[in-house]
Image (cartoon, rainbow, N blue to C red; front, side, top):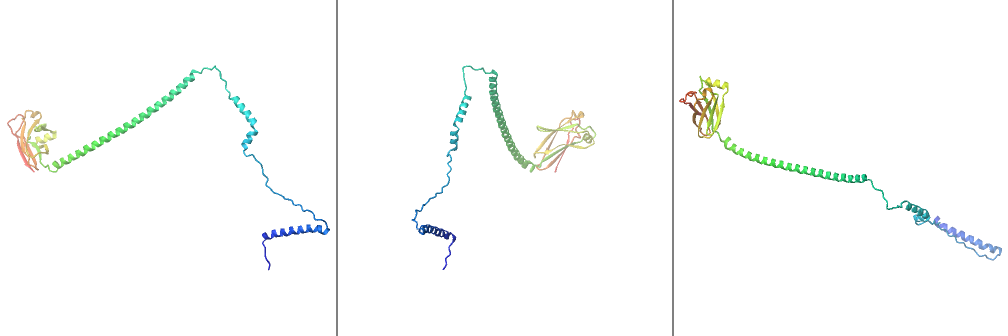
Length: 277
């Protein structure tokens, strides 16, 4: 039976066989010549890596090698920076001192001006804020007043516009065939109304027409009106007093016929015609 060996395992065995064969030949040679056996010399060879000795601290080596040069340069530097002083001194130029003082004054003025500008800007901002607050307060007050006025108007509208229906209309006429007055003044208590007539209106009155002198809502009661006239032909005319009763929720018309009243006639009495709708 044959056994196969791998090359890695056969190589040491082959070397061992060759070494044994060489030893046998060397040992057999003296025997062949009948010579006394000689001593075998053995030599031992050691293989080591070459160790390169280098400095551990190159900087220290550099300084040590160049210490003479470095000392010379340091001594030279000390000689260069050596300062010699004595009691004598030169006077400084006063202009240089003044320039230094002026520079300090300019810097201080700049700081003062900057602080003043910042304070002014802050004051303007505060004033603006105060003005805005004042405007807002005024707007709030106006809104409050408008709301109160709206409530009052609503109450008045509910009391008068929705329910008040009593009204009075006063008309005058009876100037046919004679000059009409330039104006009529209608008075009731402390109130009075002046109604001026234009030229076309006076012409219409002189031709028998009538003119409205009063129209408004009134209280349902008895009203007494006084009429006075203005114009060249009506200076001496006496006032005319007319009373009228105004029923509630009715429109009352009062027509005053001044046919019996003239400029110099104090005894004439007007005629009042009243009707309602």
